[in-house]
Length: 210
Image (cartoon, rainbow, N blue to C red; front, side, top):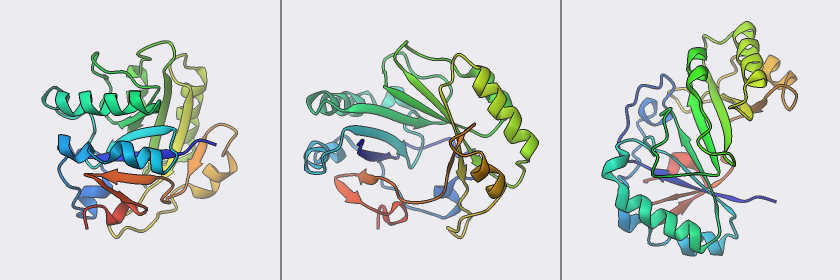
C-alpha cells in the first residue's frame, strides 16, 4: 500500500485561487529553506513512505528559478530513498529542468483543461477541481467528459472546499459522491498524509507552523 509524505512548501505564491485555504484561514506556513530539508530523509525512512508529494503553502513551482538549490537537495533525497515523486500545482507549465512521476494540476476553470500537456511519457497527470459554490451538475459533467476524452489527462478528482472558518462545504456533494470511482474521484476534506514542513512532521494541516 502506498504511503505518502507531503512536503509543504512556501516560496511565496500568486494567491489567486479563490478557495485558498492558507489565505482564507490566515495560516502561517513557514518559509521554505534548504536547511528545512535536513530531516526529510530520516522521516521518509522512519515512516516507511514510498511517495513524496510537494504541495503548499504557496505553490511549489512559484519562483522556481530562485529555488534551484532547494530542488537539487530535494531530488537527491528522493533518489537516495527511491521515492516516487508528485507535485501539486496551479501553474500549468512545468519547468523543463524537473520531472515528477505524477503532476496534480489544481484548476478552477474549465478552459484551463486545454492547456494541460503531459511532460514525459511515464508521467501520470491528474487534474483536481475544488468545488466552489458556482459549480453545477452541468459543469461537473462537462469537465468529466473533457477529461475522459483527453489523451493528456489520466485522472480527475473533485475536492470538497474548506471555507474561511476551516469548515467543510457541501456544494454538489450528493451528485459528486454518486459519481465517485465511476467518472471521477470525490475527495472529502481530511488529513490523509503526513505533512513535513521545515524539519517537523505534522498530522494535521492546520497545525503546520504552530
